[in-house]
Image 1: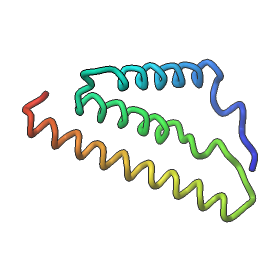
Image 2: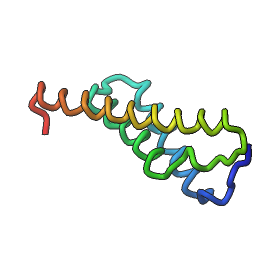
Image 3: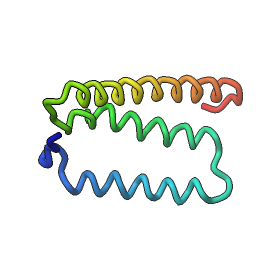
Image 4: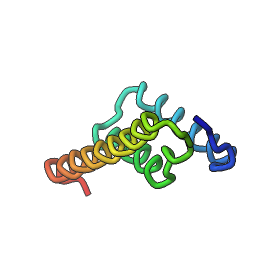
Length: 96
């Protein structure tokens, strides 16, 4: 498997990593509301999808190609599920 190092700028990776770390610290603290947790999760997964994260790896292995496609598909499905729960929570609570 080959990794395409120039696919993402280092500064962008660091920024994303810092954002994730900040959200983890916030999640460990008291008072994180479900709508915020869903928003964070959706943002992370949408970022992976939009930036085509799973295309950063190249391989000749049919098995690894399938695994990367499956990870991409599972991430897309999970993001849709999170969005549906987020939408339903907003409807149930009247949050806009």
